[in-house]
Length: 397
Image (cartoon, rainbow, N blue to C red; front, side, top):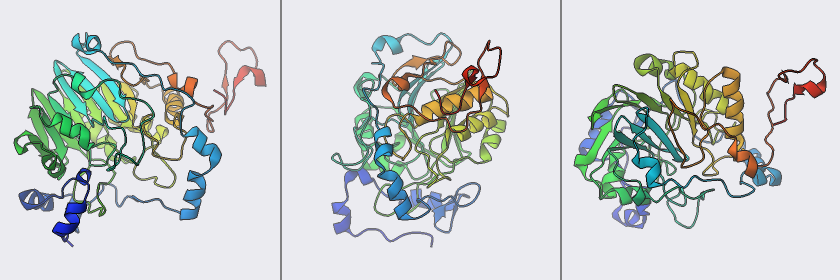
């Protein structure tokens, strides 16, 4: 099968606008010419990825509706948000590179005088409906209108927690360029973005915008917004280079050997933004655990610690069965174990990777204790013996 039957006009009229639009015409012809498109769908690197929960529905339901687990999937108080101000963003970064995590996978990167906005999601829910679906655990750090001019908006794929129709419509009236994977431009045009502002790329293709080089690189995930998951839009990670600085945004991905290839071709990086939330044993191929995320960062850096890891895709929406703060806690463990520098900004808190990094475990003030099931006992610095009281034991914070 190399295509699909279009919806009837009646059914299409009933679709929510947030479903977007299917690729067609020359866009679909270009998709069919892609070396990554076979048997009517885009293919993942490393072989087929399981995109639906594996195991029994009963097992998943038991885990999802467990009362103790449900309590841990929401904060115990207000998540501390840095109310980003004009003063935060108006002064150029002293080192030439500044990152502001806006929550989930949305990051504003200021790189040598240019501004790049990754996966902007300002909506209250990541859903096609305003009344249902995962709701924000914290407010956005600043209104989208207060963000200021952006040179390029980068979209990793078309899932609702990465491509938000209300946010795109708010940005459609600007002159900002959008860099997107193959097929995703159909959604944006449907929502009012003009075709001349789209740079639609296959993996390994690059485009130049405002003196920056943006390259779409492979990821291990899937796509789809409507009732039918046709796999006709590509998913990607992204490399952005100014000549002076290089950064990487993973989008959504499972762990695969391709990180080493991306690092060899484009790294090492001053900073990586790596997805490490919404992981589950029910879908192990399409999202990464914190340990895998740290490993992927090391792969991107040529196998050794370097640059700064910014954890993304956590703390904003409840999309899995793990505790909401678990990704932060476990990433702190994994990064310390590897000797890798990691930044833990509050949502909206700008930082420069070459400057002082935000390192406070801010989530602990509003979360229940998080277990550390794998942590090896470590001798407390300065302890004379090895008694139980001198150890940092597994399971403790």
